[in-house]
Image 1 (cartoon, one colour):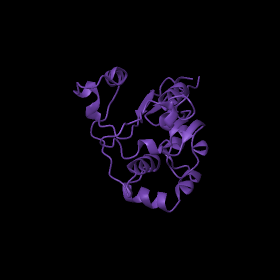
Image 2: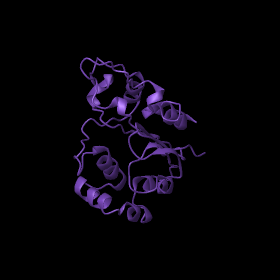
Image 3: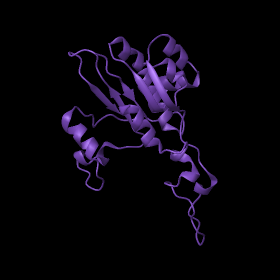
Image 4: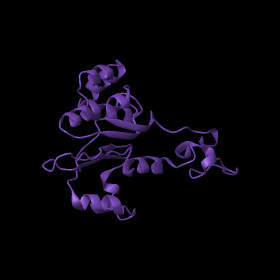
Length: 192
């Protein structure tokens, strides 16, 4: 029986169709250092679900971002991950708009997982110059990059002035765009 492969901005989940293939969970989070997970010794933040995953599987603590050709490191990270290329080769592919060529040649990692017998699914932040719906067996709730910003969130707080902005206030959009927090949207997609 096939189980879906879930891949989203903070979590990439791989599931297997055959008993001999292991289930694989790949977590991908922007701006998260492994040392911020309690299971790795950080005691200021509770991360019970990540701690359970660490206890039950293989973890990588020495995987480093090679940097970026632009200020958006997430673009470089995702392009390197999807193409298997180093930062400068991935940059050439991204800037040259050749990610579609890589996809058409079947060289993206989601396509390689499909050929290995996994069913692939994507939800979340994509930020790669090719259509995610053409890279995965299934895809939904795809965002190109960061959520919408509002002027109330810029250059704040200002000394002596009230600060009306709150990251948890749905009226400012952002991660609440669409009326439901983005973490709930991708979480529901993952278990749904």
